[in-house]
Image (cartoon, rainbow over the protein chains, first blue to last red):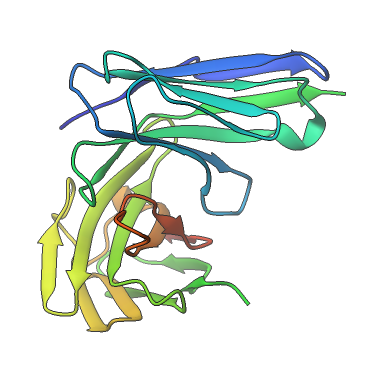
Amino acid sequence: GQQLNQSPQSMFIQEGEDVSMNCTSSSIFNTWLWYKQEPGEGPVLLIALYKAGELTSNGRLTAQFGITRKDSFLNISASIPSDVGIYFCAGQRNQGGKLIFGQGTELSVKP
Amino acid sequence: DADVTQTPRNRITKTGKRIMLECSQTKGHDRMYWYRQDPGLGLRLIYYSFDVKDINKGEISDGYSVSRQAQAKFSLSLESAIPNQTALYFCATSGQTSTRYNEQFFGPGTRLTVL
């Protein structure tokens, strides 16, 4: 089935460093969503993007909807230990349509 | 109180047993979804329902069935559990906000182990 390629699969960084991760697809999406999952919990929506080229921030998190509509990026600035978790991208072709999820990026932050 | 709840949170069962996972929501959303999460594979859609009378198969529906008992309740059944159905199962909901149904909200998950 449809897949999103999310990279990197895992990251081990020092507290204070910036983080970048991305998702790419061979197909166009009209919506990109970024979720964070902490251990023992369900994914929580961080940022939603609805327009090609859109750049949206949520605190230290910034996400961009790629111009080609086939990719999206998430950046975390000045990471802190509570940023630890798995970050998922999800794409949607049509409003209200099914979400296609990336494989996830597992982030570890060393104090 | 949590907006999307799942029961049980953990379940260990044996091959061949029938299992039901339940999901309830207080968000007033009309759309509900069941996903399965396996390490390294992200979340994959099992079934989804856009309202009480609408049930649709997702990417990996074989071996599963669902029931939408009410707008707020959506249950997932494994008629005869097998070991490769061992996974984390998530329920999610979405509803119309302005003109958007895009954003899905997830429950805390059920960890199912089939021996």
